[in-house]
Figure 1 (tube, one colour):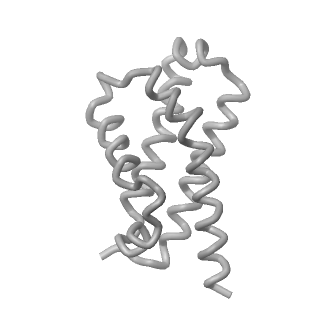
Figure 2 (spheres, one colour):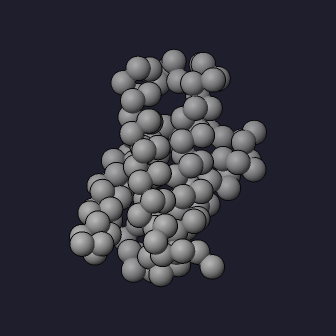
Figure 3 (cartoon, helix red, strand yellow):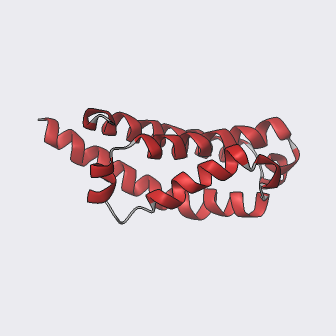
Length: 119
């Protein structure tokens, strides 16, 4: 059984991964990311971490926050890990630029919510 006390920690891991991706976007153009395999897979790894942290969230937490597409996030992790040979850069970059800013906002709100419950 997953531990509810760990939900905040998992969310913090997700936020840290988003921060690393943002830092990478400041340092590299999309073309550099696509053409430098080490940099490219650094971005992929951070997305995997987001998916794995999502998987580790309790079912209760995920059910209480249905506005976040938890199943899609977890599903993307499975594709990145097991279907690594079929990763499409355009789709990956679209997730990074379009979906992560929304996810960041949600994750920050969830961390704030859990922090206020601790007090």
